[in-house]
Length: 333
Figure (cartoon, one colour):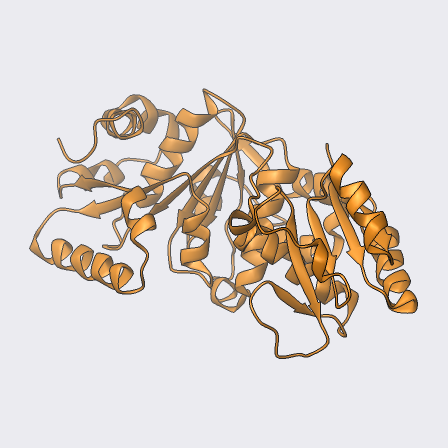
C-alpha cells in the first residue's frame, strides 16, 4: 500500500530534526518523511516527484506554487492564532500529525489533491428519522458488496445489531476510533480486529454507548474516513448516519453520493424543507445537489414488522427500491 509522502521544510535545525525524527519513528508504516533546511534542495526534489503534504515555515515562502501541483502545502506558524491552511508549530508532534491529516481531508481539494483510490463513498441520512433508513442502508451495502469490496459503517444510536444478527460484539466503532487515534500506523490489523461479515458484506459494529457519538471530536471522524478511503482495501463505503455527528457536513462533503431516506406525508415534507433551507443558508448547495431523496409510505414501513432478514430485504420490495435509486430511478414509486 503506497505511503503518504511528507516534506518538512524548516530552517531551525533542532526543531526540524525533532519533528521529522518523531514522524519517522512513530509513523513509518504510514508515511515517508523527508526534511529540508534549504529551499533549493526541496524544489529540486519536488520537481522530480511532488510530495503529498508539505509542511513549511518562515524562510520557505518561495516554495508555495501559485497554482496547484497535487501537493498540499501547510504553513507551520509561530503563533497559536493560526490562519487557514496553517498549524501552530510549537505543540506536541502528535497534535501536528492529527491536524495535518484533518487538512489533508478538508483542504486537499483546494490545493489540487485527489484521492489515488477511486473509493465510492455513499452517505445515507434521514431528516425525518425514518425507520427504514438503516434497512435501506444495509440493503444498499449488500448490493454494493455484490459489485466490489464494500464496508458498512453505522453512525447511529441504539442500532440493536447484536440481537437480530445473533452476534456478541467485543469491539465496536468506539474501539476502532480509539485504536486508530493511538495506533494509526497499524490500521490494517486494527480493522481486522473490529470487522464482521454478513452476506458478503463487511461491517463495523455500531457504538454500544450512543453518547460517545456526540462526544467524539469531528477530526476523529474525518481521520477515520481518510484511513478507510486511503489505507484500506475497500472500494466502497456506506456511511449510515443516525444523527448529525460532529463534523456531519464535512463528512457529507466527502461522499460521492448521498441518499435522503424520507417518510411520506405533510409533517415529513416540512422536516425536509427545514433541513434543506438550513443547508442552503450555510452555503452548502453542493451537498444539496448530491442528495437523492427516496420516499417511503407507511405501508412500506410494514417491512420492519417481519423478522429482519437482510437477504430478504435485498431480493424483496426494499431491494427493488434500492436498485432503482442506485441505478437512476429516484423517488417513490
